[in-house]
Image (cartoon, rainbow, N blue to C red; front, side):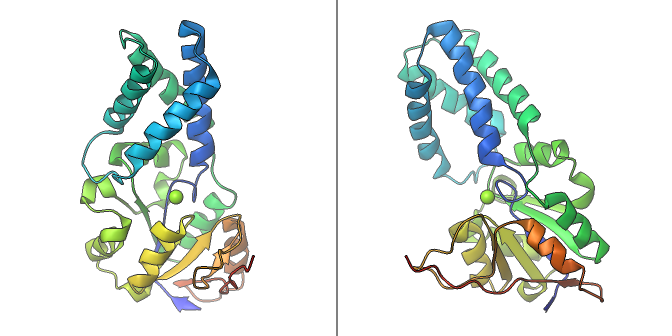
Length: 249
Ligand SMILES: [Mg+2]
């Protein structure tokens, strides 16, 4: 059991199904481009996959709106298939955003864990690598704004999770690392930086712990932690789950 003041959540694929939502939104864009230009979905998927990979290596540390990044990626996609942007680029951006807002889905237990944190007198921050405007809008669209006290993004803070974003966030709220628990789906970008900073951390993923990594507290779903809140009798505590044994393949 750990005495804590703040609980830090990663956003994408921790509190909501980001990968599923963004893939579904892109499928609508591919549908549009197939209708207009007869492009094949598979070709577009593989081209866009490569474009996405190139872009993500920046970890979004510049204070630039999300639509700028997306426009840039779509321009590259258009370029790979020799399509002139004309009105189609804006159309695709609209198709993507409309679709994304419709398919955003909370992860199992996300709302319940935020409610449990509030009930236990814990402050909640979201720490995310992404454009600030997009992450703020996502929290709003998911109906989570009332549970999130602070949002810290790489784009607003100018640093990413492996070069100090978590510590900067803690400094902002005047919290020591030992008073904060970080929850996230990414071992390298959520869990390990938090542990290295002296915070507690929980890896939240439907997966087994890779054998090459040290054992860390692990749950398959946030719902498993919600259940553990019931046993808490005092305020300002967070039920960090047991450390998982590394999976030996
Ligand atoms: Mg994530």
